[in-house]
Length: 307
Image (cartoon, rainbow, N blue to C red; front, side):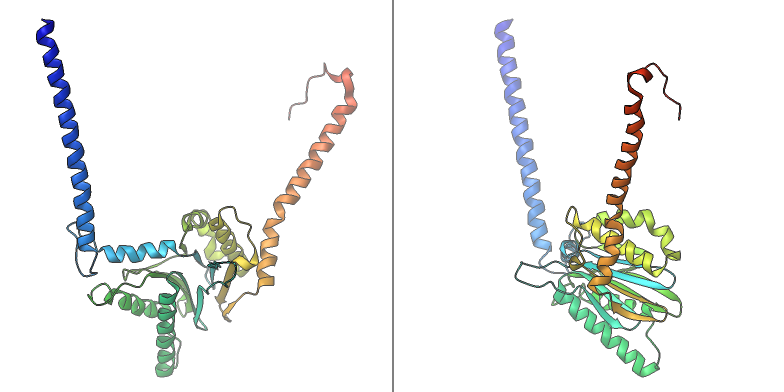
């Protein structure tokens, strides 16, 4: 019986090893085919993959995620745009991520700054032409639609590439304050508050906890929330006025940038509060400990007071 069982076990082990090696080869073959198909279908923006994807558009959207963070918030009467100042090296200055389009429109970008400059120049041109022709400011929604149409054309022409930049367009018109996000794919969405760029998920989490109060917020509260959201994207770095740019526009307040002193004052209001609370807590603890020390051993049998 043992003589018959031993060859059977060896044959079973050999078949298992063979099936395992076959599965491994098939898995590796599938991965290689997926890579091959990906390389085959991402050379042209107009070529669809078998799964219904345009890889170059997805690559452009990934470029937005790699850019420095930009944040936008709006209330009934004001719009605040903020961005992180990131320099390539200690010897260079940072690139501007917020641009003025008109007195009632501003834009913050994340992604390829060169593409953002081209699109902001296009937006300025559209705004000036509308003002010259109709003698009235260009509505924010109409400008956003034109910008989205311009981005969509780049996803449907084989000799073009998608713009590798996301834009937060904030503005004020007759219908109130608006904040839009324009995607490289040509889509656009309106938000109460939004964040794009690297480490933007932490800022989104903060904004999601607070967005219900933004509609009734004052100008100062919006600026404070924008700077706090910027702080969330730094992940451990000390927040300083030199690390962020903040712009504001609102009713009877044309688009303008806040100076570094104003930003630092806002930062000081919430950076110093925890220290004061800690000092107060230590003083209370010392005051509570003093009577206990005075009581001595005679009060050890006394039951503590219920609070």
